[in-house]
Image 1: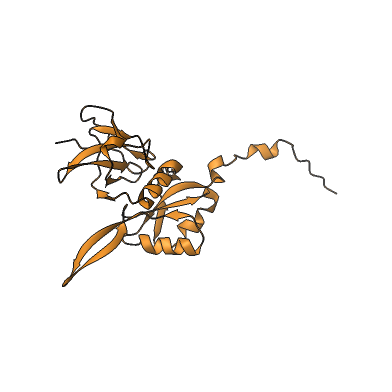
Image 2 (image 1 turned 135 degrees about the vertical axis):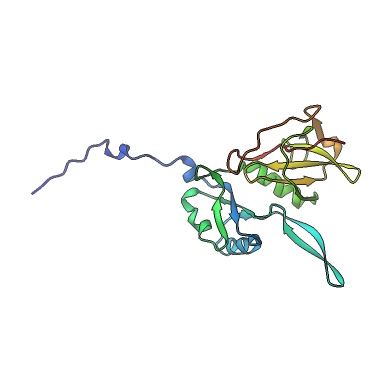
Length: 210
């Protein structure tokens, strides 16, 4: 008979996955062009928690005008999963990858995803904006987006706020009451442009009051 002796420290020789491997966090899933809604439908059927922010846009179709619900961040759907379950998302037709850095998915701060979700539910108007990197920076002091930083711009005579997501290189512009804003600097502040995955979360963008 051959007996085997197992060292009590043998199990400690294997690297343990990080806690995020088991914790449900928010991630940005990059999708194929115009596949966001189909991806969201499949995620719903698979009972995967997700968030596809939409905005209303009017398009002219032949002899009539049609109001459409379009993705606020084209090409992206936010999913809340533990990394051990990432194949539940990656196997969905239309999903290309989870956005991250060095092939590792990068979480999006929970409070920012939830804040945006609550803001849209409360009727705050938002629409896509070209991606920005610097400007007159403000902090939102009140409401579901309290704590977020953005950039004030003038659009059609009104002041609005641009919020940017460096992780996915996308910006949105929102109507925020001036009384809810706190000015953080007096002029443009340039930042190094980064590629997708270099930073996480929503950050300041580029622009200034003209």
